[in-house]
Image 1: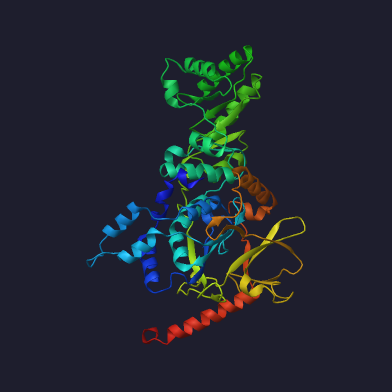
Image 2: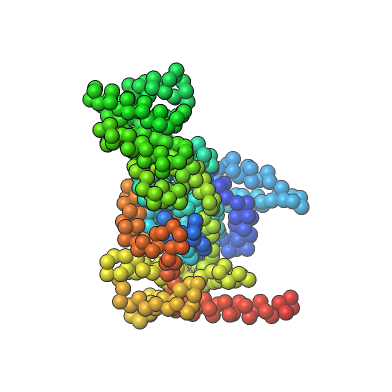
Length: 492
């Protein structure tokens, strides 16, 4: 999805939270605008109770950086804002700085379609701290929602446009769900822009516009003989089934074929078995059965467990709105800083009274380790600034992020680096991948992921850990900062 699909590109700098701009002003006034920061975007908890998410939204990030600039209209608006205590919120000299603002950051990210897991870096941004800060909100907005949307299993058509969170959300859902496994979309604009196969039937209103259901079916078959799926539950499914059989035979007589029927209500398992039996008995085994009606992955799995002879599923509201979990919970945290590009990085860590919110320090990268059959077994986060040149023994031991007692020797395993460069000095460094490339990557990744990680109920937790040296650095930083905090009177 190009940013022009969701917003005029000259508006993108203003797609931010106010505090990003007030912090930027503070950095500029403090002489820290060009100090270097390393920020890492990740998510903390499993979405929907699953073991993984599918990376999506990466393709938009180069365009985000290249279009991060402020128009005269933006500057005028910011100049008009008043602080709560009175006076201008932004100083005129800072606004003059923004007039000529251009981002010169570097971005490394996990490619679209790749599987990602909690706590590991999905996107890493390095560069002037002020520029990195201004990217935060839009980056999380773009990557977070699309990565949240995932699908797997039999052919699933995405039908969620009318229930999506606005036009932008409808486009994002269509694109992300196709990358993650959906077979098609009802969204014609998404089909045109991204090359996603489009699919559609007709509404109940079509049937109700005619004097009889049979007349409506005949008219639709005449109008769309090459794309004819009949919705048979407007009045009575069994009667609708008989009318569809009649039309299917009439189509055969003129060299055409009824593609499928759709059921949108009732006991879908029971009704699909009845319909399959009737069509097979009439010599029409090629007619497919599609179902809809507030489906989600659990309903679909239940239908399959009941042996429902369903060929495709239309999923709308539950997918388009991420019904069970409306946000990924993505965060964007500073993990290292330095005075200039010539200086070494200093790792930093955020503390919290909730230990799981403590961050991982360093200029992070992540390696995925594989078994002898190409299946991923664990991921290791490491600090590239400290691992390089430390000897062969360094980087062979992984300490689980959430369980320091779980230590894994990865010295005998093959691995692959997950983060790849996509932006250098504010410009894209690689051609934009097609949506098909991302989809094929996702298919391959899911095919090689052990079934224990893919089950809906109580999936096995995938091991994400820190390289042992990084784990030690983190422990030292935590102890140091906790000791400093305990020195204050209110800490006792």
